[in-house]
Image 1 (cartoon, one colour):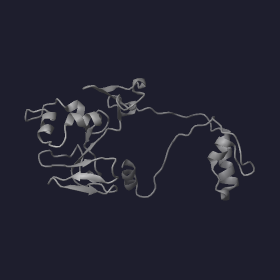
Image 2 (cartoon, helix red, strand yellow):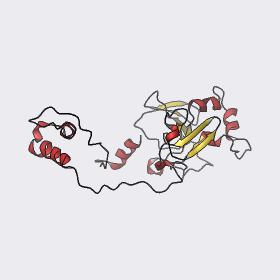
Image 3 (cartoon, one colour):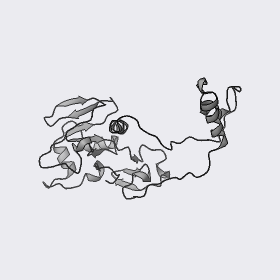
Length: 227
């Protein structure tokens, strides 16, 4: 859980020796005919193998019986929203994007919580921890929030009162003129209201998500968001 998920960064495991005495890279190379692992890592330096936590305790790092459970392998790709899945019988099937497996599966993917010095133009300005350096590449965390060695999350407490402009926007478009279907943002950023349809852009405000809620089946909604 170096990035707070149960997964391994392939680059950091290349030289790791397994129970049979061969390294991780040697084992992959032994079974690969159509690609070279090092060449693949040059294209996807954050290549990662994830052990997902599936609903209803169907599979996770905690209940994986490695003596009996042989997982299928899912591949996250930009080519399609559906998920290519290599089954335990070496068949490739397409798992619909809205489906969740109820059987053991590993996911091969790039790591969205890391950035590479090859792909990120402001890499040198990042003040996060370097998780890997070697083979001509350096990887850092995108944010300290993903660093498994940092346990305290950053929480912003907003204590000052809402700006009167925001209160006015709500009052105009939600209370006084609810049938106009106007945008509160129009008033906040441009001063636009029913009797004033033009205005200069204001740089006084920036938007941030402070909270959200889910309705209906919470587990289904959560699973959809996590996709």
